[in-house]
Length: 195
Length: 132
Image (cartoon, rainbow over all chains, first blue to last red; front, side):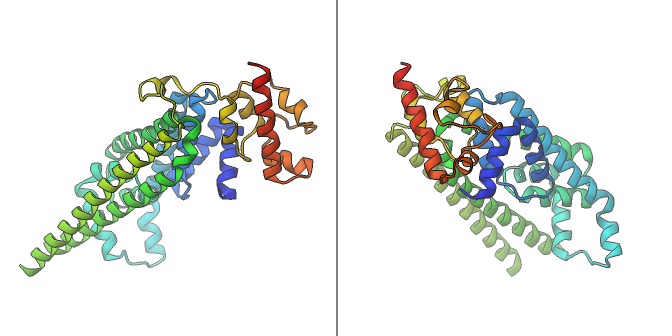
C-alpha cells in the first residue's frame, strides 16, 4: 500500500467524518483521490460500528456534490473569460463534447459519477456549456448516491476483508474509464458526421 | 455514405468492447467472491441480507487483518479491547495514545513497522484466549 493511501486511511480513522468531507470535496473538485478504496474502507469500518453507515453516506454524497458544484460554478463563471484572457481557442473536440452534454446532460452526468476522474471533466464541461443548475444537481445527486452508496455497501458487506478486493475495484475503474472514453469518441464522431 | 457506415462500425466495435468488458467484470467479481468464500473469509452465516447488521466485533482470527496505518483507537473498538489493554501490553508511553497509528508506535519504540505490527497482532491474539 502506498504511503499516501496509508496516510489517507489513518486520517480517516483519526478525523472520521471531517476527513470524509475533505476527501470527497476535493475529489469532486479536482484531485484524483483513490475514492473507491476510501469508500470500501469506510463501509468496512461502519460494519464494525466505528462509523455510522447513513451519516457516512450523507457526508460523502453532500461533500462530493459540493465539490462537483464548485467545479461547475468556476467553469460557468470564469471558464470562457479565462480562455478569452489567455487567448486560447476552444478545441473542436471540446465543442463537440459540449454539444453532446447539451443534448444528453442527465445520462452523461449520471454515468460519469461512476468513473474516477471523468466526473471532474464533466463538471467543468457542464459549467462551460451552460447546462442548467437544476439538471446538473439532480443527476449529480442520484449519480453520487448510487455510485458511492454501492461501494460503501460493498465495503460494509465485505467487512474486515475489504482489503482483498481493492485491486478488483481498481480494475473496475479502468474498465469504466474505457467505456466512457468509447462513448465520448462515439459522440465526437457522430457530431462530425452530422456537420 | 462511406463515413456513415464507418461510424456504425466504430459504434458496433465500441459497444462490443463494452459488453465484453462488463461480462469479464461480472466473471471476475464472481470468481473473486468464490475464492474468498473458499478461504473461509466470508462466514457461512454472512449472507447478503444478514450483512446488513454489520460484521460486529472482530476476533483473534481477524488479528492478521490489522495494518500499520490503523490507529489504536480503531483497533480497540474493532476488537472490543479495554482501552488501556494495548497501552499496557505494548508499553506505550506516547501521550497521543490511543489516537496514534501502529507506524507511529513503531517509530517511538525504535522498531520497524513489521515488528510493531507483529507485536500488536500477538497482543490481540493473547487477549482472546484469556478472556473467552
